Structures are given as C-alpha cells and as structure tokens.
Length: 452
Ligand code: FAD
Ligand code: FO1
Image 1 (cartoon, rainbow, N blue to C red):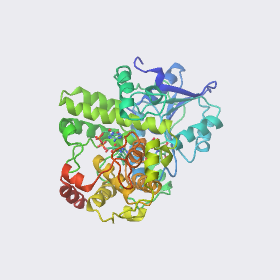
Image 2: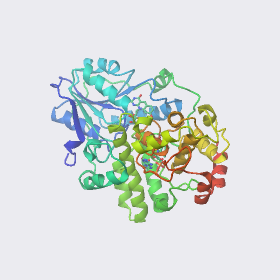
Image 3: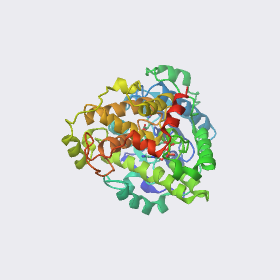
Image 4: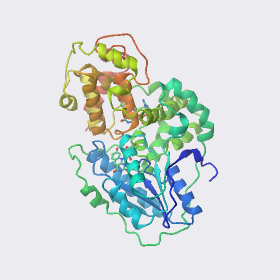
C-alpha cells in the first residue's frame, strides 16, 4: 500500500504474534472505507497470510451517552457489519468493560495481532492500557482519525491555532494523500460466523431513555458521504461568509459523522479541495476541519486534565480566580440550564436546538458556554454543567472537540486575554446584543421554536 505512512502506527506492545487471525478492534473510526486502521490490519494479515476480523466492544455506558447516541452508533455499526461482508471480513461484537470483555475472544482465537484506532480521551486510553497489560497479544495503534497523526503533528500541547497551524501545514503534503482501497480478504475466516443480533445488543444497554433519538441525521457511512456531497454542492461556496450565522444553514453538518468515525476527515479534505469553488470558503472550511479539529486532539492527548479548570492557561486561571467573588447577575443550576429556563430567550433557543436536534449551531455553542460561565456560581461549576449538557444531548458530544470548545469558551484555552470585565476577567466575552448585531437572533429563536 504505497501511501500508508508507517508513522501513522504506534506499537503499544511488541510480543510474538499468536497463531490465529489479525483483529482490528474498532472503536473511534466506525467505518469500512478510508479507514487506515482497517487497512493496516489487512496489510499485516496479508503479510502473515492470516484471516482478518473486525471486533467492536460495546460498553454499557460511555461518558453519559444516552439512547440518542447509542442508537445512532449501533445503527451505524450494523451497516459496517453488512459492508464488511463484501470483503469477506467478519464482524464480532463483544459487550462489557475491557480488558475482560475482550480476553475471551483474544484467547479463543489466539489472535496474532490486535490493531486499534486512536482516541486521545482518557477512557479510551485506559481501555488500551488494560488490554495491553492483561493479554499477551501484540497491540498496534493507528491514528485513523487525524490527517496528520496526533503524535506526528506535535510532540507537545500547543498554545493556540497559530502555533499549531504551521506544523500541520508543513506535514499536509506528506499526509493529505490519496487513500487506497480495502481489498477482498484473501485468507478466509475458518469458522461460520453468525450475524450480530443488534436488537439484543440495543436492549442489553441500560442507558438513559429520556433523551430520545433524533431524526435529522441518518447514521452510517453512506449517509455521511451523502451529507458531504450535499454540503459541497450547495453550502461550501458560501461557508466563509455564512458559517457563523445561526439563522442560516451554512455549516457542513458533518460533526456527528466525524465523531463516530462514519466518515474520514481526510476524505472530506480531499473532496472539499477538489472543487474549484470559492477559494476563501475552501480555506475557511479546511481551517476548521483540519487545524481546529486536530488541535482538539492535540489538547486532549497532551493535557490529561482537559475536562477540568486545571487545563486552562495560567493567565485564564489567574483572571478567573481574581473575579471569583464578582456578583453574578443570575445564578442557575444545571437543571435550569437543561430545561432552558433562563431569562435569556436566545440562550434558551440554543439549548433547545441541541435538545431537539442533537446539534447546536457552532456560533451559538460559544455564546451558550460563555453564558453558563456568567450565570454559574464558579468556573468549575460552569465547566461541569456545560460538559454534562453537551455530552448528554449532542450527537457529536463526548469528543475532543467538545472538551476543547468548552475549555476555549470558559477558560481561554487556545485563545488570548481580552479586556478585563466582571466574572470573565480577561476571558473573551460575548453578549446577546453582540449577537443581535451579527445575525437575525429573532429569526434563529423562531426557527428553533418551530422545531419538533
Ligand atoms: P462545520 O463548521 O461544518 O465544520 C466542519 C468540521 O470542522 C466540524 O465537524 C469539526 O470537526 C471541525 N470544526 C469546526 N469548528 C470547530 C471548532 N471550533 N473546534 C474543533 N473542530 C471544529 N464539536 C464537536 O465535534 N463535538 C462537540 O461536542 C463540540 N462541542 C463544542 C462546544 C463548544 C462550547 C464550542 C465552542 C465548540 C464545540 N464544538 C464541538 C466545535 C464546533 O462547534 C463543531 O465541531 C461544529 O459546530 C460542528 O458542526 P459542523 O460539522 O456542521 O461544523
Ligand atoms: N467506543 C467503543 O469502543 N465502545 C462503545 O461502546 C462506545 C460507545 C460510545 C457511545 C457514545 C459515543 O459518543 C462514543 C462511544 N464510543 C464507544 C467511543 C467512540 O467510538 C470514540 O472513541 C470517542 O467517543 C471519541 O474519541
């Protein structure tokens, strides 16, 4: 595979291979096409003349995910299983907490090599550490999510987009390559494989049913690709001008698919870069898709405290501390925020957009989080409320982009000091009057009110 770059792989444990198959333990990148981890696993299986299988380990609870996110994910995985059949690659579902939930499968099949995909989140890393520790199987990790592998782009926590951008741009020529195709696997799986009982998998989950499924996003990699094609055809051209206007539908709507790995960011970048549309919009979109998104992985990978006050830069921790005792004009608890019962109709609309559709407009997310800072007893309480609500209602939640986005809004991560004021100190401030100057807030509120 000419364009597979070995720097995309990290050897987590280098033990002698077993006699059995190569297995790709799929987690973040839940797709068949354009999946570097799957292609690497196939390349290793072909070199070793072994069968290849994909395994997904379903955990009963993941960072507060509810029925909304689990049903989207399971529907997407059922489509992965079906598509893999075209390549003679069987799919297996295990249920429970790693390492125990995987040990049976790994032992029974005497797995030669376990390939995993990459996530910088603490919970995903702890799963891998435990599997490496408990099973005597070689484990290789592949960054199939970022265009430039996280550990290649930078070897440290970056201060802001302006320090990260040159490092990424220097490496794009090497990594933003064409993506080879998966092959039909030449070494068949020896035993008969039954189809996964997805109904039973879904019923086995004890998840919060009160956050219901949404209808606006069809799960799976075909739907993700259709959303990309529609964005490129209809919305990319005006992206630069309209992306920050919540009254307009100008964003790509791709984040739920990127979060669950139904589509490759590299594929999006290759496709968005192909059309000679408005260059300004292409650059603006690729800045968000590549620099901003991969900066979030950098933040979570090198800052284990990414979901706490401690991850804020010194100037922000200091300035927020200086203003701890400033009087708050309003103080709301998490439940009041959750029920969109604040005094501010614009903020309530943003909350309801997320509750109703599973996705809040990117511009409103900044306003939404900053107001939670202003109307909470402390920055720590604000952080907790924002993370809880974002992870509970957003399809794209429980994602490095979310932890980085909330830390940017409340704690100045990847931002700089602004003029000092109450409560915020020098953390950038946003106001509803500022929003009114930028876009049709009444139109946005009306649009959300009209949503079912
Ligand atoms: P588009 O504008 O079409 O952007 C395309 C892609 O670029 C996005 O899917 C995303 O991968 C990336 N991107 C765009 N803006 C950003 C950004 N500011 N930071 C990082 N990547 C970006 N994004 C999530 O994926 N999950 C979250 O839970 C999340 N929570 C956020 C919370 C707050 C408080 C803030 C300020 C931002 C948050 N973001 C989150 C980042 C951003 O708002 C969303 O990625 C974007 O709105 C998703 O919609 P889209 O795909 O239509 O965006
Ligand atoms: N990854 C898994 O390997 N197993 C799961 O059961 C699982 C559930 C899950 C639910 C909601 C969600 O947003 C993500 C979930 N993930 C799961 C993790 C996901 O695949 C990504 O690895 C991280 O969310 C992003 O790094």
